[in-house]
Image (tube, rainbow, N blue to C red; front, side, top):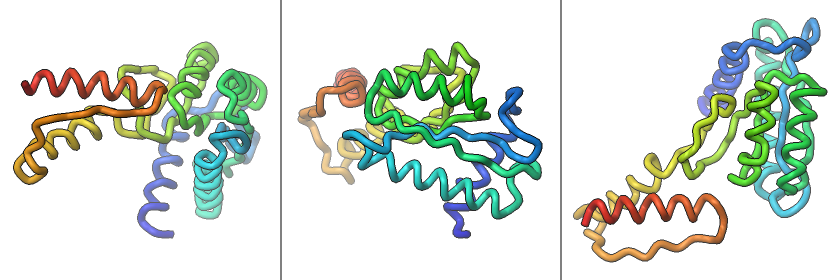
Length: 194
């Protein structure tokens, strides 16, 4: 097991151990873990790889003895790149399958569609990619960088002598939550810099 896989395995193990297990989330020798990534539709090209990484990590954790002596049991669902279906599948994982935690979503809109479900059912979502920030949910563990951790340092570098001393800026992005919000944050940052 290389260092990166070890860190992922330890993070997953510690996270599941730290959250405690809801009633029904485990049988005598297993802990259920939900995987909520699109395996079909437009986002499948990106999210299938995340599903595969989650399954590989679970396999490695189980091969090393599991978590607190219990094997992890993945429960994989396909929200099919359909934002309302993400909420239905999240509800299925938490309420019916009784998973201890869910690893999933890719887009901001998919995450925002499941937030009310995790809040209502007191479930836990591990969100794997950078996001636009400006959101804090006690039931979501954001593992990716927000603009103040990613975009602003990049702009600061480009403004520095080493980065070329950029003075003029054009902010582009596709029409969805992440680029719109990140560009709003960057406009305010650039305005504060004169």
